[in-house]
Every structure is written in C-alpha cells, then in structure tokens.
Image (cartoon, rainbow, N blue to C red; front, side, top):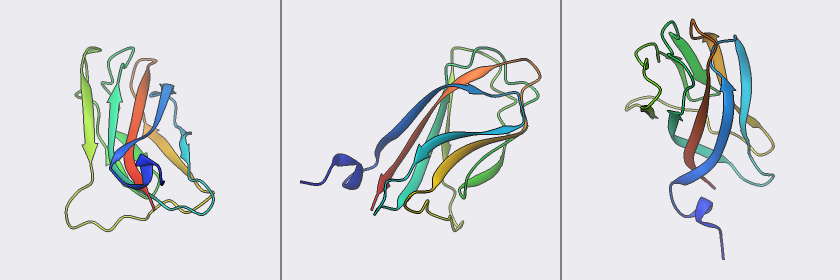
Length: 120
C-alpha cells in the first residue's frame, strides 16, 4: 500500500533550528528517487526571537518575497499557502527543497519549519 504522503496532503518534513537571520539556504526536504514533490503549505513556528527586519524569504520553486517581519512574538506561527493563479515548479526526484533567506531578521533567530504537500 502506498504511504499517506502519496495519498493525502500531509506533513512531509519538519526542520528545527533554521537560521532566520543569515542570508543562506537551508535544506528542508530531499525528494525521493522516482517521486515528484508538490508543495502546498509551509508553517513557520517556534521562532526564538522577533523576525522584525525579515522581509525577504523564499522556498525553492514555490514562493519568493515572503515577508515575516510582522512575526514579532515567539508564541505564534505563520502558515504560508500556495497562491491562486500562480504556476509552481514541483520538486523533481533527487532534488532538494530549500528555505532561502535573502533579507533575514534583525536579531539572531532560529525557527522550526514544517512543510506540507504530497508526493506523486
């Protein structure tokens, strides 16, 4: 029987301690051989400090220009959804899905990032 990850929108990965300040890319998920990964939602949570100043984040082939600067409390979370009327690029077998920091938070900060979607 195929796994739930192939039959439902489900949490594909959780990555802890993602640096939300430094301009860099962090691997969130590597698509298995023989599969294609379709991203639906990203949840940013458990930030260790304010994300003020964090005006430009992105995710490989999915979204760019994500502004999290309003996420100034450490007790909340943000859900980032696919947008209507936008064509996204699925993540091919063996490829890595990255969280990209272009203009990160003013303060040093890490967060947990959950990725939801499905494999086909």
